[in-house]
Length: 124
Image (tube, rainbow, N blue to C red; front, side):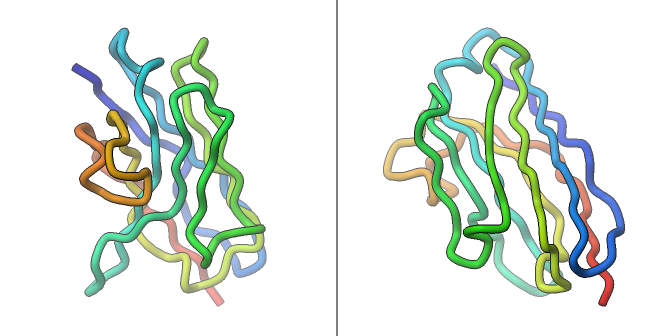
């Protein structure tokens, strides 16, 4: 069993930065792929970024490529999403996810465990 707790959300002006963290519990964390999804009001949940179990492969949605950087520290059982050059379109609840990654890390079905979400609001 894996439990995930997100932190680091908040309110920021356009062009600013935020750093989201996801801390996991459970010994199997190190064998799981991890990812971030987000859901804006009235929209479907969408993939943001994913990382394989060892941390040497990362994937990004086109909308965040070049602005967001994903990393993980298996020793600290933590995943971090550094978000730079934020714009109002990035406003959403951001969810941390963990799973075996079957079918590709951009799919929500690849993840068995989800956090409660953290709000990110970018003002113009």
